[in-house]
Length: 278
Ligand SMILES: [Zn+2]
Ligand SMILES: [Zn+2]
Image (tube, rainbow, N blue to C red; front, side, top):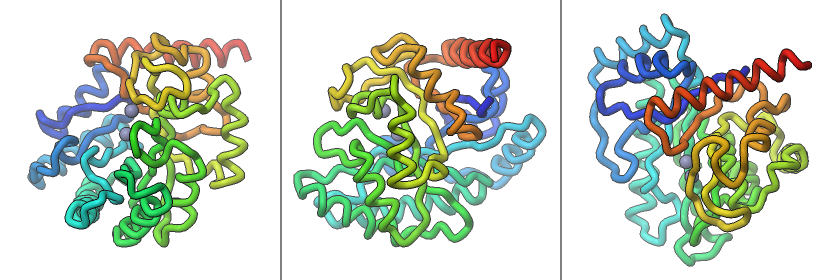
């Protein structure tokens, strides 16, 4: 089965996340390299990173995902904010390199009524100034499409990925796909289209969230696994898709650690059942 884990806080130190993964039966996880709602970031001491790297290897916690701060907007209508986003992403690229992590999920941005075309051009312009020369993989996330948010239409994601000068990848989010109007009960058709526009190997991360909000509602509210309007069966179709083998599955469901453990064990159990019945 693909690696599976959830979003974890690093406020108690990076090493703590490995302990938490073991506790909840996860073999990967996601975290924010800085405060997700601001741009402040704690400088992580060298020793903490070294301990983290050692523990990761011992316990085989891998394919770890970093998530860029929500506040960064590469297509803001303010130049200073666009420049800030570029600077912060470049800082994050150095940070994740130190931590030996390659996957970095990024929301495309909000065009703020400047229009889709202008927004997409700004995002590409910004991304072209990011240094990923050490193999960092920026994964543009598929979005719900609330307000002027870009990336709810696969064509927008494809335009960014296919036109930027740096290599880019994609993170698919089940809640966002559903709320943007992608039918998950015929997920293979989406993958066919994805393959045509981008190539399936561009998908590097799967966010597995159920949705509180209705299909095509363009609203982003995550629900616990199988407890929302997508439902367990369609979610399992996505995360167990043979065509998405090897991608880390990250839960961003509204849970505490105990809840995450239950979801992870539940999903692992379903996978084993399916294997037996094959
Ligand atoms: Zn996200
Ligand atoms: Zn979301």
